[in-house]
Length: 486
Ligand SMILES: Cc1cc2nc3c(=O)[nH]c(=O)nc-3n(C[C@H](O)[C@H](O)[C@H](O)COP(=O)(O)OP(=O)(O)OC[C@H]3O[C@@H](n4cnc5c(N)ncnc54)[C@H](O)[C@@H]3O)c2cc1C
Ligand code: SF4
Image 1: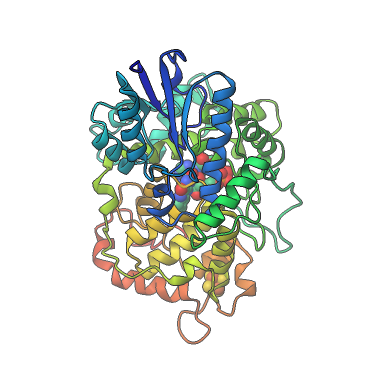
Image 2: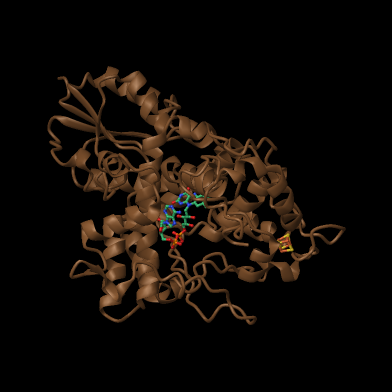
């Protein structure tokens, strides 16, 4: 008998409250899920990233089956695995002849197009995980000359009544940057509780073995894999962040320290992006911590700004500007990505630290991504597409809708100012101020020429000279302010 609905659930759509399941009838509908090699090889995906996706998918499948949902599931190791999402969908359509095929909007333009090519009638449902639909963001953008995050964020705060009182922002200000973003004192970070870890269970161990056998040459190691892979674990990770790290999140949001990958960050991005966690519950938990006096306003506003502001905003930009967004190269940068990005083998200590922990854990916090690996690529003039492919490959939380605007727009200024008002350019002194990396380095951040010159500092001046024509066109590149983070 022909199926009524075939519901495709992608690896980053692991949400039992998905709109695709809202009217599901187990007697006449079917779910399709597929683990496919193409998603780990179109960029050479970090072993942790692939293992995380596969383990979370397998746990979600178990949950669906336990609830009585019929699921067609393709395991990566099964003989005759379809190899790509489009092939998996094409075969399922041929097998079941469903009356309707539906899927929540994918998180990547490439996937959206590939699925439509094989099944032109596929219905894409609004992704209700996000607070703004694509159309709502487009409406926000309409008629605006510039799309600045700050204005979007204020609109979102008002719209959803987050940290608001009588129509005004709680505490009388939208932004507490002056209280936030400090460096650590010389003796280092205050005592803090490391994030709760989730040692691999039998499912994850099986997946790790599979990934290591199947993708031995992909970057990274799975040895320290400890990511949340189920909804319950994701909720435990949220509680752990709110209790132990949120209070100092804002104050040390930009600080870095040797051997301390997470510090006061949440490490929730992967669970959020797989949809094991809903952004609304993270925002609500943070606001409640403030209302109960458990965390100060600057810290709570800081994290809400990231999730209600930046996360929604970058998704909006991605869908508004794709597909040509990915091709932008406003600063005309064409250098190849240095080989050490894949190994961490460099004498520049900051890069060795940030890349080393990335290869070990599939994680680096925002300032390491923006002001260490991203900054070096910007100053060197690396081809933005190569930078983008590296970020998409090496982070456990990487999905294109969030990775691409952050890389191309915020970090490389390749979109010519759609996201950032000017490039995040700085000398090595910024890194010296915000970390202890320079203490263990053979270079000196204050020196621009000669054998001890810090490559960041040398390249900064080269960047200014090289990009002068483009930089002069940027209104925010004022006569007195050469950098955002100088
Ligand atoms: C070059 C570059 C590439 C990036 N690639 C990704 C990516 O592939 N996936 C990804 O989720 N984030 C990406 N980010 C944004 C940010 O760095 C990560 O979300 C963050 O480091 C994840 O760690 P965390 O969960 O501990 O975040 P926290 O610092 O604890 O922040 C809390 C949450 O806010 C959200 N958030 C914070 N900053 C951003 C931002 N700029 N854009 C969107 N959401 C944000 C995340 O969901 C994050 O979990 C990138 C940033 C840069 C500069
Ligand atoms: S001296 Fe330069 S290269 Fe070395 S850690 Fe500092 S910023 Fe990085």
